Each structure stands twice: as structure tokens, then as C-alpha cells.
Amino acid sequence: MGSGAQQTFRYIGSCAGVALTIAIVTSSSGGVARGTDIAMVVSAVLALVAAVSVMSLRGRH
Image (cartoon, rainbow, N blue to C red):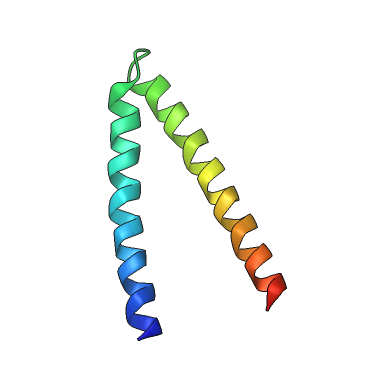
């Protein structure tokens, strides 16, 4: 069951991540290049937050 839940969240996260990235890139008023830069920063921040969350949860175990 744990593996199934993990796979489900992985697929949902991938779909949401792609949708969020496309939304950020296309909504920027500075053009696609500026939107791409913003999307990369947002993705990096979210990855950092996820890494810190995982490390803090592993420390409790």
C-alpha cells in the first residue's frame, strides 16, 4: 500500500509540476524568456523546501 501511495503522489506531483511550470512561463509579462527564469527559480525553491522537509522527517525516525 505504501508503494502505491508513493507512486500516486509521484504522478500527481509530476503533473502538477508541469502544469505549474507552464502556467508561470506563459503568464509572465516579460516574455517567455523571463517566464522561464521565474519558473526555474520557483522550481528550485520548491525542490529545496522538499529536500529540507525530507531531511527533517528523516531526523525524527
